[in-house]
Length: 320
Image 1 (spheres, rainbow, N blue to C red):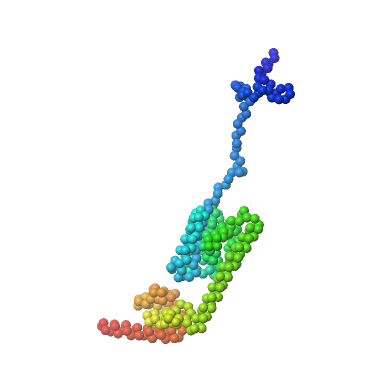
Image 2: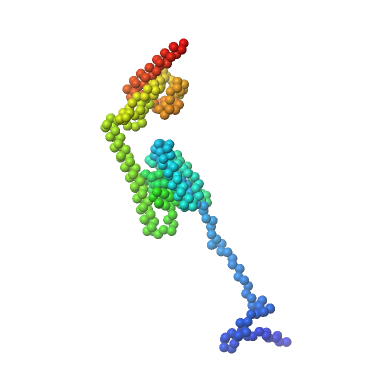
């Protein structure tokens, strides 16, 4: 028995053109048969985006003199500028490190706070962080061309980005730069390093010239020792109370007392150091060494202590 032919019109005519009824929508079983299955789009695991690293920033500050550190002049301005820069760059500030009264002649990773800052940067290498080191200017890190080149190479190897606010220079974001742009970037960095070292050399030269001029005028150069202060014309002026303390120190040492015993006795007698602090073994040793090298200082100290001792003896006798 022959199978009945379908009642649907042929898909094409004899000439190859589609039959007009083929444009009509199919219904029923024919629609289900001719319906294409929906394509399920599977994710391509090779193109799955990786988790972005967190952008964290560390601020480092430094001033060279103790006076700047005590007044906050320099440190406060550096911190304010760096914090504002971090905020504008949308970075997460982790910590601020500061080296008050530390000279630039000490290498960055050998300074008290510089060591901790370098350790924090190195710790970020093994964590899912991208560290940014923010400084106010290049001179806060280096004033040596050679040391700057070494540290910059270490930053480059460990993908640490350095930001210098004053110079407006960012070192480390060079992945998308052309070879010519990277070359220009290297030249600019080298110029800033050379300028920083030249500035240090000029400051040192001017300081030496100023000290030589003072010595030529007969002025005392450096911090005055115990028993003296600077006069109006730069000369040393005796300080009675300090000379009495120095005389007592020398007398106690001449009697065979140890530096620790001498410090204890000076504190009991009420004498203070040059900075107005309590005596310790190290301060006793340094003051004695400086005084022994100046016979005139020893003579003045002994005479001042003799007068003080006689006065104290007279007061005790009067009370009795």
